[in-house]
Image 1: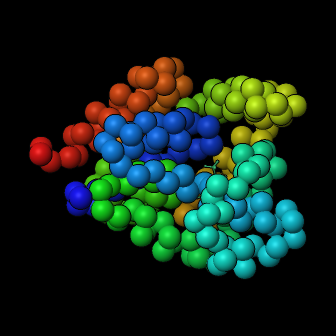
Image 2: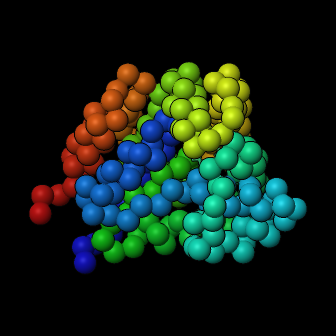
Length: 206
Ligand code: DC
């Protein structure tokens, strides 16, 4: 097993960070954690009346494969519980343990390079215009049978940006030393290549 190597990938909703992170993890043979899922699990529990801090403290790895975590309602609920200090604190150890596992790890989220893993060996900040991101997310939702308009998704994306970027605790922003990738005008393949090039520059030759 190779030594731990953490790749921190942050960015706003639907920037392409999830797709890029999965591809980067596959390329390097690393494990991947979508940390948004942790907040989505907690958000989903609040929608059925469970108190958010209790939900965060009770979180189990198995919860991450629950169904219906990708709906717009759960996304908004996730963004709301993510402003609660005790919720964020309850999720830190799980993320840090994952980040330092043997064999390497890619974590994507909002505060990976800034708060969870400021010492990550490689950091990326993936962004795109709100219109571009809303269009991508709308296509995804329509393809999976959701009945939403592009305008509704744009409003949703902007509301989450506003909350995620302006919260007092661990707001979304580029980490120091992060390589920024703006995917607005890029193909998925080009964005993945740019990410692999940026990470490779941080790896010692074998
Ligand atoms: O990446 P996502 O869209 O699945 O994330 C859902 C919400 O969770 C997002 O709006 C803010 C929150 N989140 C966070 O605060 N910190 C993270 N590391 C990941 C997600």
